[in-house]
Amino acid sequence: QVSVRSFDSTICLQSALSNLAGFYTDEPVALDAVLPKWPTGWTPVPVHTKTKEDDNELDPAANCPKADKLRKSREKTMAFQDFLASNWNLFALLAQNGGQGPVETKFSVLSDWYDTVMIEKEQFNLTLPDWITDDVYKQLKAAFLAGNDFTNGAEGFGQTQDDELAKLRGGFLLEEWRSNLVHASVGKKKKYHAYSAKDHTVMALLMTLGAKKSVLGDDIPPYGATLINELWKKKTEYYVKFLFLDSASSTAPRAITRLINACPDDADLCPLQQFLDNAIKFAVTDETV
Image 1 (spheres, rainbow, N blue to C red):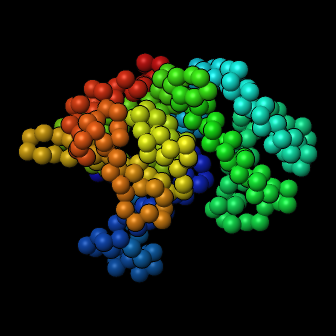
Image 2 (cartoon, helix red, strand yellow):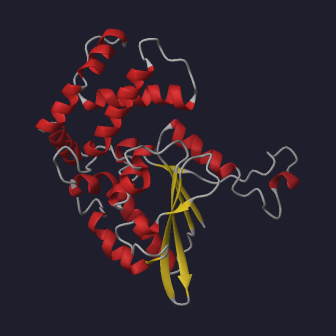
């Protein structure tokens, strides 16, 4: 009844296995009661994965020339190039102190730099090099947040949302979710599907649902942030409910169904067929790319 998929990276696989380690701790007959040396409360649950190059569902940046072309086109717009140029001091500072010599004036440089420094500073409370002052970090974070959603298809810098780019980044996983809901509603065996992936996966899926800004603002999901989709049955009708767990330290998820474009904005339960019909706009399969 359980299906678990992980992106093929160390941290994603570790996260999946760590979550599943406590999944069946309340089993009526624990294995450690039968096998004394068995780890207490642990029942092995398979975790499936794909090669990175083929994992369009869990890696928004998986090999997709069309998505790459659309993203690069956005980054070449005059307004975005002016934005990068306005942060020239960050590029100069990194070139002078980063130990890698000259750097290109590209958003990916700021993105990779911020990702590294953010984890060191905010997740592990490590001491940063003297040249990364609080003001530098503040500017770096602001620059990253200003451009991140845009490079993934969101509106900004004088451009409307690029629906095609949003589809290519999050639509494969959206289609798999739609398929899971349909199968569950007709009585197929699998009742629980879990996916262990990256912050960009969560953001890409939220964007296909039209809820990235309303759920996260300009920010990125913290460690452990989880998007949850439940199938409910009331009498003879099926409904879906969306929830969001903000981080690993959150005590309970918050309902976000009303923020989903494919659902009514006045109820926490969304008619299944309405969601399926409306969400198909952003759903993608290998055959429809």
